[in-house]
Length: 325
Image (cartoon, rainbow, N blue to C red; front, side, top):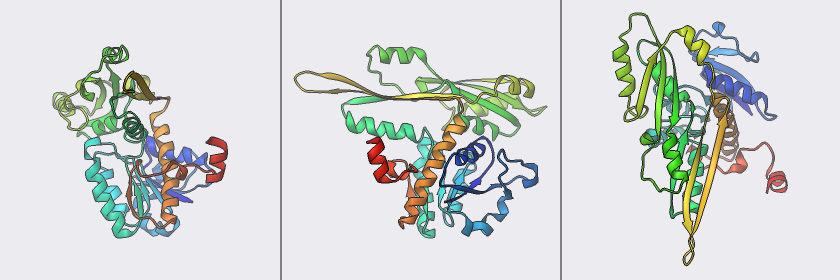
């Protein structure tokens, strides 16, 4: 299968790397809004202007979209879903249904397949929340992120006028984790389970108070969270905040039984040295699924809930049953 990448930030670079580990994919090219001559890919992939994308439509089986969720993906996924099979990592949780509806309509019109919000949250964590609720209906979910760098939140800050660079660290509240692990059943929101710490580089002369207020009041990302903002130099950013590690866990605490009650816990945990590299690897697996679904004649928008695991793996069905089941 032949794959194209739109965007060449940390996520796009990760997708390029992930494809190099596959046996069934060929990377056709990277498509960028920047001057292609200004970009040197890590493994010598050809870089094209985004303006040439439609000229290469017939050479691409699946397009992996690596832009940000604030400004890029709401426009790009819907636009390209009419003419390509696409996969994205849109991550604004409470707007995913609207995004799904818009992309689904475009995919149906163009008779293509799309898979949205593929990552680890939304994505793998979402799937494990579904498993937990299905298996333990009498229970509660708890999701913790971090400590680590959130790509989506960092990108959202970088979209603010006057911001040059930014890193956002999502940090779980240890006292909340300790209470849950001790057996307490807490009715608590994600905003009370985490705090957010931001390190921001701004253009000289920028109104830092205005930027700080804009960050803290940003809906879907920071509004309602305990958020701290630190303004630093680019040199300090480069020296102290290169690491892109992240992780977290989802667990479901539930009760089974009637005469005797049994306390059951399902847990799924990730420890990631590179958040974008891992997210990129998920995107590549679901690009394979999109290709296979398209070859079956399916059209429309799918989510991680809709895609059977058998579509993700390079091996065929019989081999997977033999080796893994």
